[in-house]
Amino acid sequence: MPLLEHSERMLDGPPLDGRSERLDAHLARLGALPRGADNRDLIPSLESSGLLGRGGAGFPVGRKWRALAERNASRAVVVANGAEGEQASFKDRVLMAGRPHLVVDGAILAADAIGADEIVFYVGSEHDAAVLAMSRAIEERRAEIGRPVSVVTAPVSYVAGEATAAVHYINGGDARPTTTPPRVSQRGVHGLPTLVQNVESLAYAALIARFGERWYRSAGRYGSKGTALISVTGAVRESGVREIELGTTVGEIAAATGASPSGVQAVVLGGYFGTWAAAGNVWGLPLDPAIMQSRELTFGCGIVGFLPTSACGVAATAEIMAFMAKESAGQCGPCVYGLRALGDATARVAGGRAGAEELGQIERWTSQVRGRGACHHPDGAAQLMTSALNVFGDEFVHHARTGRCSITSARIEAA
Ligand SMILES: Cc1cc2nc3c(=O)[nH]c(=O)nc-3n(C[C@H](O)[C@H](O)[C@H](O)COP(=O)(O)O)c2cc1C
Ligand code: SF4
Image 1 (cartoon, rainbow, N blue to C red):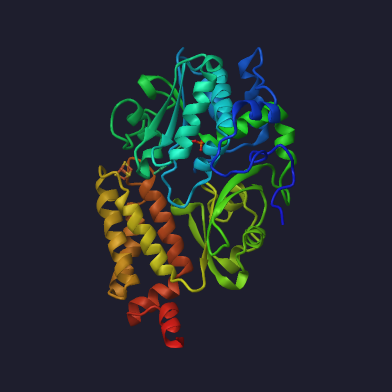
Image 2 (cartoon, rainbow, N blue to C red):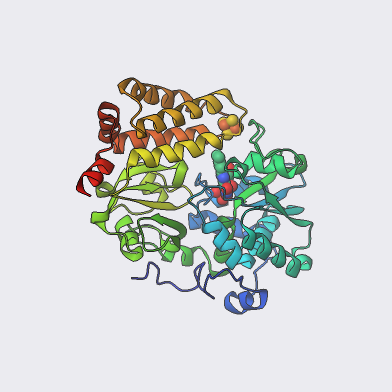
């Protein structure tokens, strides 16, 4: 079952097999990049398209461009964020490796619209094919870009993709978040107002510039408008990137990727920064940032992870919490110590080495780390943990009470 039937969407064109689409093929497929006499013309179109940022926070793209275009300072910088340090996400690296010119298009349009003097493509150093494709694409178009442009490879770290960490690293510091204010839109790269925009957001801006906001909004199911890239993982035939119409349900994605309703117990939505949900509660859920937010769920950077019925949700959460603790940038006490304590306690519960007291501590620490960091890293971890306690609450209690996992011990007894 195709998830998307509209033509001229992001992932049309040659197969995404690691080879990048070259400039001539890109132009033959999509036509020349429209660069209007008034560079700001695209902003109203982006605003009415409803396009939301795809780096995780879901901020409206047009509104962000307008704020920078209407700034007081004369100079500015665009950073195309392709760090993608989130383990369960791969849509940005696939996009950059396969369709680098669409990302370059979006960055050029953003720089034109806000009057930026420089463009930086910030790409995760571990995403080799993406680094190569972006570097090549820039070389092919250096004259057309018409301003200083570079690829900066981001260190392998989850928080390196956070906007202030990216700016700090590009400025010669380490890739750790800095305190706000000032926001990067006020003081970013070289101290100049900086637009940090996810690469998928930029690529969609390039399509909207060509085909218009009505075209973008013509896709979408059950009242939702637009399309998005998602990374699908877990109990599926094969993990991969899909382009979906917003509003496509979790069940439809499961059907298209081979995840069966009887084989899935829970779904992690939005990634490690996101939320767990019981499979039965979200099978009919439309993937749409606004609808999800209204149900206290997250679209985030578009991760849909299916947890099989044979796996332990407590153990899966312990793994994520260990990762989040390891990835703390080590500079805010509540984040460093709080996430480590949470990670250790969750691992003890998962391993049957903790009791009811530890469960109480997990709940307490979860509420204590929230909002206590220079960046939103601890907030994301706390949100994930809260959702785990809701969805796997009985299993947490079973582990704490018996020291055993009901899922794995049932498997052992059956064997
Ligand atoms: C811990 C952390 C890690 C992040 N990593 C990324 C990333 O790898 N790529 C990305 O585009 N945004 C990432 N973000 C979000 C960025 O701070 C920023 O909001 C985003 O790049 C803006 O682009 P958008 O508006 O197009 O989403 C991260 C945020 C946090 C708190
Ligand atoms: S909250 Fe955590 S990840 Fe964010 S800056 Fe502080 S220590 Fe680093």
